[in-house]
Image 1: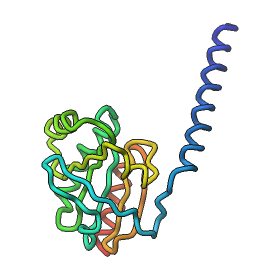
Image 2: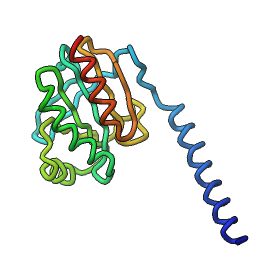
Image 3: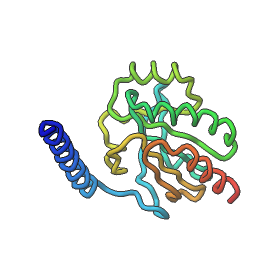
Length: 169
């Protein structure tokens, strides 16, 4: 019994240290604010096409920051293929992979049959400029080029609701 209490206490202590460290990391990174212009970036798709964020203004833009090993990312990206299809007149999804190899990302994209551009952020410049520390992180940008909504984790229902709101404005 004493051993069990010790293990629980040790686990709680380690978790609290991790969350404290995560908070300090988050505090030191830039934060994307609702109603503000997001950081501009350019990148390349897996197919080698240049992508500049400002070229998509006039449409709703969804940025999804993700990793191939993240199960919630996989679920969200799969669901977003249906969202992209439904709202293709209004919406552009840009899936930004963070720091992984092109081969791994290419395999992942093909396996999930993603129907939107997948961008590479191998040096983490884009994700750092957005303050990303958790996956998936989703950012919705309105037609005027301002941040409308941000979410962390698997929030498919909320994302759909926000896209519906933006598509009517």
